[in-house]
Length: 358
Image (cartoon, rainbow, N blue to C red; front, side):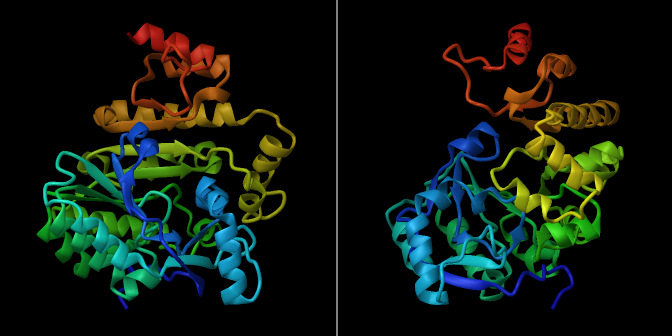
């Protein structure tokens, strides 16, 4: 198999019914300016990223009983994705449900809108790619709607000759991005289980750009060690910011499963201790880290002429008064926390910056 194909995990696959409408609007991604619609083709993908919000997110909680019953019936016991990253939820009725939805729509559906593939899971999960389901679904959407499709994945197979040939057929309606928040190969193998290595993802991006396929940068999440070691510029350069349409970036944000993330690091290492200090000891170090990440991105973007492409996703409520000053002008910043009734940030230090930009 092509070396760019992610190895994946030896998944414990549980088959579930899909939601009735697979293609739906996405308020969260509208706020991030990534898309207006989303399409997830499985309930939990075949990768095992320890920080994944899907493992403990609202969707998981909403369908908790369904997931528990299915895993118990099919695997013999109730398994949580938080305890076993190899767990994968696939939709047994995916194709007929998608067909039913597309039949009810006209070819003009989606005109002027972007659909992200995918929001909560990775549509290029190795099992679905290998079975041809990923390509079939994308072809159906591209042939039978007018959406522009934003592909977001950690599987470097998108940079293979096979997939570049596919994307080229829809060159004006497809844009491809690989989530790349780190450079270290060992880190990836212990934190983003089963995904393509960073070097493979960067190679895939270069292949896509060389072939004339539209690309975007997705530096999410960038962990604190990259900031501490001043490697943000190195990370940015790997995606060739001059050749991408937009660069999204985001720090690691608080998750209730932070101990699962921490378990991917050796005790007494910088990242292990960082999680301990922030979430156990509550020392409030996240604000400085998220701010310093922005500063390093801003300085590189300003110096190298791509500042207009920067979209920094900031959950700003935890930003301190001292750090808030460094966001002066809020250039390239997309605030993500819920606003107050006045439409301004609930963080009074950030809201003052907003007033000054009006």
